[in-house]
Image (cartoon, rainbow, N blue to C red):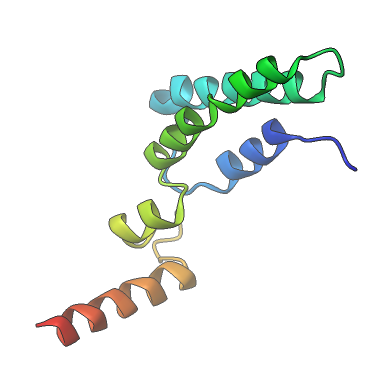
Length: 109
């Protein structure tokens, strides 16, 4: 089995985020990385006890909260709407989500 790399996946998420600003979101990203490093280190260490591994897993809800703040969960992305890109447009996926949400509102009314 391939070793867990939560930190690697977190960094991919940060790089793909269209809403993070390095100047004001650095602490948020650093906190997320710290959680990921701790979980990765504990779960990959053969000397970690089952209790240690369980305690590391208790950090994951905090990581999910950070991902929500980054608008990097499916629900948080649908709540905020499309991401504007530097070129001035919105992503195709975000635009499709917005249209689907608009249609759902019309049906509900």
